[in-house]
Image: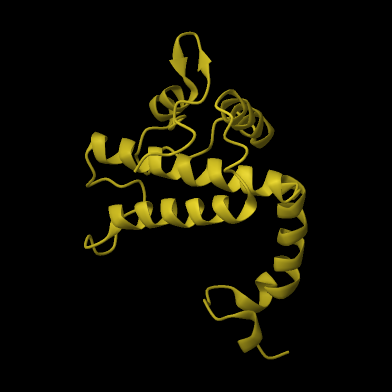
Length: 158
């Protein structure tokens, strides 16, 4: 499916390599090598790149909240398709080929790009919203009460 951003997973370049390429090389896919995200680009950097991309193509007229939400849902569907019929998938995707991993990276990038642009159009500061939401989650799911359980917070008794 064509996406109105075209950035895929290669978002920034440093020393001739994209950040995602450098990150994959340094983190690998093994259990002994814990996964972390690259520090660049930031969400604000992604927002700026997408805003510039959209402005250059005069696409703001199409990128209103409803349209962006529907595009986001479509992209989430494309991610779901990659997992469909596979059964449980192990962390790190050890049974996936490199082209399959790259396809997933591109689709997840599409999801993130649309999410960031939707947040921008709705004037939601995502990093600050995450901080507030995590604080709320800590109240709803105190570790001492929920440790090892997958119940919803409304199922716990005081």
